[in-house]
Length: 260
Ligand code: NAD
Image (cartoon, rainbow, N blue to C red):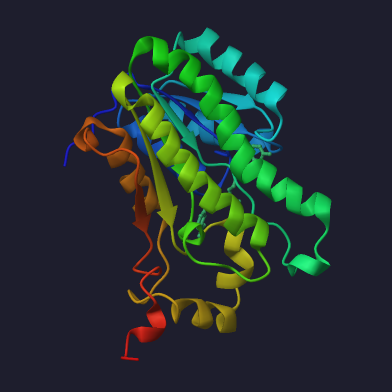
């Protein structure tokens, strides 16, 4: 399938590592102009940007903490100044936080997880839509998780935020449908990135994780990036308000694979 994002102006949050990095590279290869957001790793972001530039694409880096509304506003000002509008927003930045049962959890840690995973996409969508609603075009892709559906003991803030983000996707899609703007969620399962390195880096926890995946393996970053590129492209022109799971059937109750 030919994915054409030629001259589409795309802002990708949390793009100095993991899925954000590979999505930025994929979109750039498909012709998009990239605003590459990072939080605290300027060197990593610049290295990715120069790699993208070497391949002939237009890219620049943007520092911002997505959990801070003022910082997000300033990032959008810079992005719009550079490209004059926005066609694609990927709300990718996220953290899962430290494992803690609810009654043992630290309130500020819980708030931080929800602020980054849910408030961040809201702040960014709010800014992007100021321009997209005037242009009457645009696509927002929110990176949720299988945990928008699957409860995750010890990670209540993460699961609650991702479930909330899924509903934010659907609600915004309703608000902007008549304006020609699409809004979707992409829900990865277990993909090899820095966020879950402690799990796939350990043979026992890796085996336990693979047990939860009917397809029998972890996903690769490229498999998420290809799906993201499809969703933001015209090939998905009638897809909005829903979630695409890229998860090897992880949400499909793996324990029932051999009957129940
Ligand atoms: P990652 O840790 O490599 O990427 C997360 C990125 O978010 C990092 O670059 C980090 O710097 C950035 N970030 C964190 N706080 C930020 C803030 N306040 N402002 C701006 N950026 C911030 O991990 P990843 O796997 O690439 O995760 C990307 C997204 O995919 C996350 O939303 C995550 O929840 C989601 N996800 C990942 C998996 C997986 O298996 N890897 C599964 C489901 C969902």
